[in-house]
Image 1 (cartoon, rainbow, N blue to C red):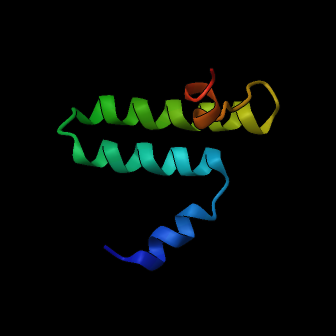
Image 2 (image 1 turned 60 degrees about the vertical axis):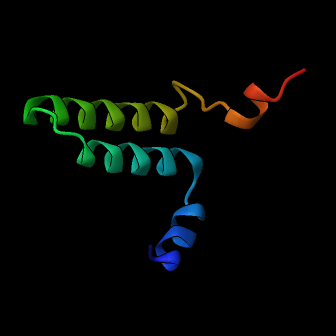
Length: 67
């Protein structure tokens, strides 16, 4: 694995890392092209909602480490 690429990805904002991860996972799955394009559209819509303040991101670690 290219550690330089991994380090660059870790420097991305959380919402962009999530999008990157979803796109990587989608590329591994043997989905129908229409389904794949639908997911890409969904990811882009979610990114736009976060950017425009219509949605907010939740911190995964804090959600699952609450007492």
